[in-house]
Length: 247
Image (tube, rainbow, N blue to C red; front, side, top):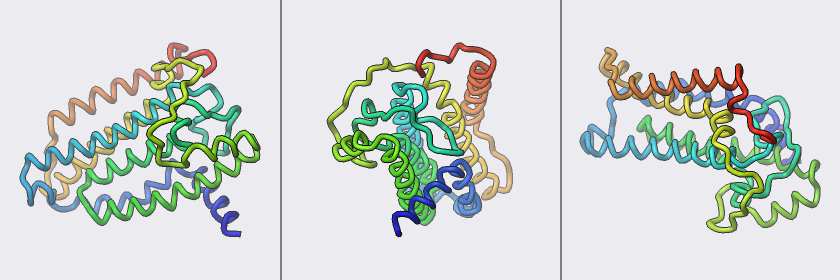
């Protein structure tokens, strides 16, 4: 009975996973409404190192997603939201280290962005939410994959951890790594990370100092990312330059 509840909840969360995190918006605004606690207590150098670490954590999550997307064939590991889709069972590449590499990447990115807000309470709440959130989505996906692939899924699941990757056991995928596939699938993730960090940084200054204080470095990074994002969207929708056979 409990398993059925988890699966039903996971199905709902899977469908609306692109919007669920928006509920944290008010909490983030509350968290960044004051001064930067690390800068206030430890100085600007430590604050800069801390923020760089948060950015690195967020980008590490993106790197895991990229390493996953660069190898997968068409019909798997997509951005579908209305229902589960899997034409084949991924057991190589990142899927030979963890059964849910995309969710691992998402979790690292979300925690990197959350920690950037410099609120212990917000970070703890987000961490707890991710545990409950991912537990349910993974339960729903595993139920689907079990029905879809039967014993093949059982054999793979018994040897590969559900979330935290094992340090060895990499199985080389049959398909070569494709940067074009990564750019086609992950350009939105790249833009979302930078935009989230920019909004947190600049909104904190506005709320705390009551004035806009646009950092030239942030503006330059956002401008470059926006142009790159626009070009990639155009290439995806108007050309076949990012298309790869079998991807």
